[in-house]
Amino acid sequence: MSDNSGLLMTNNATAIKAISNYIYQTIVSIQQENPKWINAKYRSTPWHHSKYQSTLINKLTKGLSYAVVKDDLQLKVTNYLQIILTPEFINSDRYNALISQIDRLIYPEINIISSDKITNSQIPDFSTNGAKLVESGMAILLLDVENLHLDLETEKILVDICNYPIQIKVAFANWRSMGKKDEEFHQRGYQLIHVPPGKDSADLKMATVGASIFVNYPTAKEVLVCSSDRGLTHLGTTLQSHGLTVYQVRKYKNQITVLNSQTGESQVYATSVPDIPTVDTFIIQLQELIRAESEKIGLQWIKFSRISALYKETYKLNLKDVVLNHFPDQKSRQIFVNFPAYFAIHQPSEKSQTYVSIFNLFKPEKKILNPPTNNQIEVSDNITDIAEITSQEVMEKVLVKIVTNLTDGSPDNYVPISNLGSEFNRLYGRPITKTIKRFQPSKKFPKYLELCTSLKLHQSQEGRWFVSLS
Image (cartoon, rainbow, N blue to C red; front, side, top):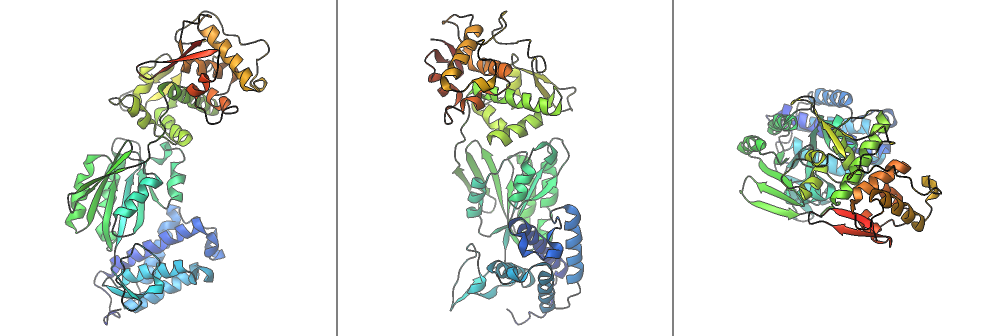
């Protein structure tokens, strides 16, 4: 510690605000990971709620502002931590790391800290007689969730890129339309900022928040701007003009591109390739989701944004990535326009949201298939309930009967396997993809049909699967 450690630095108010924010984030993180480290009086408080966030930060900021010199500030911080946190945490390595970071905010100059206080492997090591020279600094990650999905694998890549630890992570989205993503990102330590629906709402909010980073977080050295929208270039320029290194992070399919604003270098990293379903399987998946959601809420028309969120939640894939894989030049909602035999799409006005439904959602007795037939399908007299399908052999008989009716019994007629899946769901009230997993857990729908000796498959040049009788 330098000789002038007893003096307050000139930007005292900024440092106190940064310290208060850092303490708050630490408490939220501890409550998620190990709530027993928080004293019983404060353990049940929902600290992640904005109401308690502002209350705690304001109280800390006000209390710390009474410090006259740096050493007083350090002592007040310690007192607050001892009030909120248990002795078990105070005696842990995690507490030592917390104090080390706060010391860097109080004493922004280069610090000499005992090596047993250092627990973050990302801090540069310039060892001299058991001590480490630690330079103050941290990285901040800003994420437009609506524009770019950042999974844990990609986030680890960004951690390795940065020269400083990522200590603040902020995610922007209209969380009402994102399913359970808010829970996922909250558990991953993100601050969640809600934006209203509308084009570029998340980007505009990110630009507003990001532009004040150098004021609110004086020790920030690096900022990761994670969005494929090029409209955030101005934000990067603003931050760079204040001495921060900005990484522009974009993602396309199974590649992530990181542009370093300081060096101008662009690096491309490969991520694991998701298991993209075939077009027919994709149609069946969407039909199943729409039918289940409609039955759940009692409405025929479902918001496109809701379907997109449900697809991601159910299949761990972005709907737009699947569409992009099969139809590179089309937008996500175009998938419902491409297959009018299965889906209906409605948009009341240019500014309103798009709604999607499937035909005969509440009238299963009336069949719409492609191609249509005049014969009402009746499966075996002995197999009329899903509970009766108890083996792979019985399942094959059911499928053969459905295909027979769909093709009028002609072995030369093929129908899309999505028709087969849709009709099975209509008759038995259960998705066919879930039913076959009872007999072949590892098989996807087309591969399962290959096991049925009474059926034969054909794949078109466009990659679609069709089925007929052998």
